[in-house]
Length: 283
Image 1 (cartoon, rainbow, N blue to C red):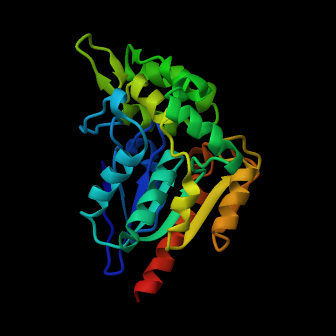
Image 2: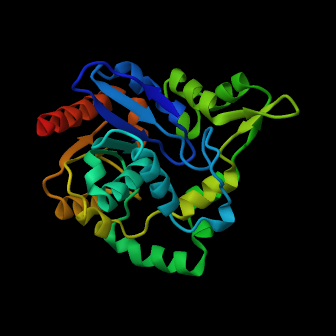
């Protein structure tokens, strides 16, 4: 878990939830960029980073365990808090805001995992039949990920400029490796988020988010890519905005799914804006 303390009586606490396969350390740059009045905390999700929570992929059926873990953690903080999150982290934060509105004063969702309505029936059938992990390319890719490297430096060099990391600045990759690799008895390093767990997490994504979204009572900021393929494509965004038309929507033209790495200043500005809104509401 990362924690950046703030100073002053008007402190607002923000939790930032990471994406599938990543870890809290990946986003540590946000702690340097945020204004001093914001107390930012970031928890490693179950099966990720340095989390010690039990993570058996055979027992993972949905993202409810992630939401319950986040709920338990947020209850230890001074409420209400601003919940921000990237990808899975955004979806799980939204679920907590819906279930426990008294805990959450605002949401900043960065390209959350939300299916278009037309995709929900097929996803529901696949989930019921237990074949989601075989039908989702991203789950199949995660199941084949390289898990072990000779050193942290080798891992960094392996990722720089390649695949999902091709748009990441080097310092973000270094942060990801710092938080996501553990030493082995063979004096190598390996991913702390085991590929079977990551694959099952992708396959267990929330299927019907709109019922959850309708229950959210706090202000929402949504940051997304203007040109985005599923799961959060233009149809999903349109459905989101029909469900919550008061949402503040930012569409970024020059962006991929990895908005926090490509445009950290925009994400920080929106977190600060939401924190200021909550501060004004609390008087």
